[in-house]
Image (cartoon, rainbow, N blue to C red):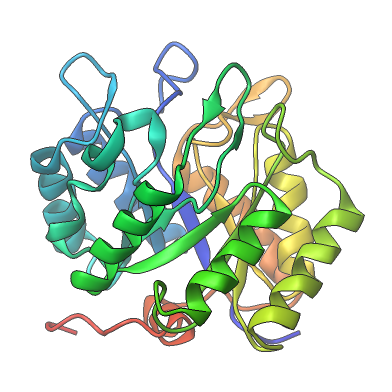
Length: 280
C-alpha cells in the first residue's frame, strides 16, 4: 500500500492523571507543548479535551478556545478536533465549544456501556450536536463503540443530519463495550465500505494495551490510526510512555513497516475533505 495514513493523537482525554503518568498534559500550556511535539512526530489530527483548574474534565468553551488558538499558532495546519464526549459535561454543555468552529468534533451517535457507567447519547442530544456541527461547518468524527453506531451514522447521512461523507472511527477495547476482535474489526471495515463507498476513509482506536494492536490492524488494512495518552499511558507493561510524541512515533514506525507514508497535514485535510487554513 502507498496511501498516506493519518495519525490522530488523543492528547489528554477525561480520565488519565499525572498519577497515572506524569507526561499526561493537563493545563492548556502543557497540552499545546505536548501536541506540538506530537505534530512534529507525524500526528496531523489533535483530539482535544480540556480540564478545569483542579484537573477535572470540563467542556468550558473558554479553555477550548485557548487550546484551539494555541494549537493553530504552534501547529499550523494541524486538524483541531474537539471532543463532545459525555465525561466532560451533561446535555448541551457538551457542545458548548462548537461555535468556535474547529475543523472537526467527535460525535457519538448512540449509547453503550462503559466500565462503570452507561455512556448516554440520547437521540435528541445527538441530533442537537449534529445540527450545531452543520451550523458551524464542523466535520464530525463518528465514534463507533458498536456496530449499530455505524448504521445510525449512515441513516443520519442519508437524511442530511450529517453532511458530506462521514469519517467513522472504530473504538475497541473499552471494558463492557466492544472487545478487541479481529473478525468484528474486519466486518466494521466491510460495513463502512458497503454503506458509504469503497474509498471512504476510516480510523480505529484501541484502549490500553490494545492501542498498538488496533494501530497495526488499521495501518495494515488501509485505514487511519489514533494513538495518544488519552487511550493508553504505556509503551509496554513495564514502561510508561514518555510523551504523546513517543506513541505517535510508534504508529509512524508501523506506517513504515507497511510501506504507508505518514500523511502530511495537507494530505490529511484533502483525505477528509477539510478546508485549508487561511494562512496556508
